[in-house]
Length: 587
Image: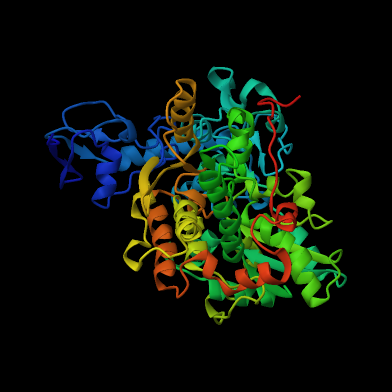
C-alpha cells in the first residue's frame, strides 16, 4: 500500500512527509527546533509538558506539536513572541515545583530542564516555589530516585510499562498531587524493578540516576594495599566518545586502555576476551543439548543481568532452559582473581577488579548469587557505567583526546571480532552460531557466511533458520523486555500443545539495541544513535583478523593451562551459575 504524502509549510518552509507524521517530527526533519520536555524519540507522545505548542493559520488554537499530525495545506508557525512568552511561563511553572539544587544534582550540566531554563534566560522565581516534601528512594542496588526532581513528563513510566513491560513505576494520586512512584507506593527494591536503568536513561532531569561509585573507585586506586585492575565491555568503546565530542560509534578502545593506565590501574583487561570465553562455554552447552540431548531446548542466553532478573520473576518456568554460563563481566572477574593472580603472583585478597559497563543492572549482578564469589572473593568489586567512566576521566584532569593508543594487557586482553559484537542485539547469537558451527562440524563457517545478517538490526523480534550442514537451527533474538513475552509465549504454546519447539536457541537483551542502548550509556539515545554504535562494533568485527571465539589464542591458552576444556568440572565451578524463581514483589 502506497503511503499518502502530506504537503504543508512550517515557518514558510515547504514540507513533504508521510501521512501521520507529527508536526514536531516534521519540523525536526527540516531543521526546525520545537522545544519539548516530555517527548522522546523512543516513546509515543503524551503532550504532558505543554512546551511544544504551535500556531496554525486559520485557527486560534495552539495545539501541541508532538501529538498533532501534520495535515495537507497546513501553515504552521513554531516560533514568535507570543509562543516564546508562553513557553517561558510553562517553564517557570515547572521550575516552581522543582528544587533549586543543580550543583549537587547527578544531571548537573546534562539536564534538559536546566538547558531550557538557560536558553529562556530564567533567572528569577516569578512564581512562589513549592517543592513536595518527598524522601528519596535509595533502596535499589543500581538506581536512585529523587521524587522532588520529577517533572511528571511520564517518560520513565512509559519506558517501564510499555517498552520494558516491568510496571515497576506508575503515577499515583491526582491533580496537583500527581506523582511518579514505584507501583503500590512501595520502595523500588520491593517493586518488580529489574535494574535495567532505562528509566534513568530516558529521564530528562535528575529524578532518576544511576548510583555513582566513582568515589569508591578513587579510594581503591589510592589504597596502596590494593592491586587494581579494570575491564572494558564491548559497547563502552563505541559510546564513551559521545561524552568527549566524538560521533556515536567511534571506537576508542585503545585510547581507553591508555587513559585507564594513567588513572592508576595496574592492568587493563578487555571484556571482549571473556565474551569469547562465554561463547566457548555457552556454545558447548548448546551443542550438548542439541546433539547429545543433555538438557532442554531452547537454550536461552544469560549474559544480561536485567533479563536474568526478569526471567526469574516473570518467566521462571524457563529456568531449566537458561544457559548456566555467567556473563562476560563475571567470567573475567573470576579469571582475574584466579588465573591471572596465580600467573602474576598477586594475592587475590588484594586484587581489586573494576568493570566498565553500559548497564546499571551490572551493579546488581555483582552480588546476585553465591556463584559471583567463585574465586573465594567477590569476583568483580565495583561496576561503573559509561557515564560514570566519563566523570572519572573528567575528574582526573586527563585530556581524553590527547591520549595515545595502547593495547590491552595479555592473558585477559586479546579478543576476536565475535567478542566485540556481544555489545549489540543479535551479537551473542551470531558469535555463538559461529563457534557452534565449528563445534558441530569441526569446520569454520565459510568466509561468505560469517556475517549472520538475519539476527542483526533493530526489529524487536528477529527469527532465522541456520543450516549447519543439513541440521536446521531455528533461532530467535528479542530485545526490549516487552518483546520477550511474544517469544516465550510461542514456546509455551508449543509445549502445551505437544508441538515441535519453534526455536532451538534464543537470545534476549533487556534494552533496545542490546548493550549499545544500555541504561548506563551516554544520554540522548535514539535509534539513529543505536545504529551508529552498532556499526562501530560491526566495523571492528569486519576489521579484526580473528573472527571466531574458538580461534582466540588466549582462550586456547586458558583452557590448556587452567580450565582444561569447556564444561569441565573446574569451568563449571568458576564460570557457571544457577537460577531460582523469585517473587515479583519483595517483602
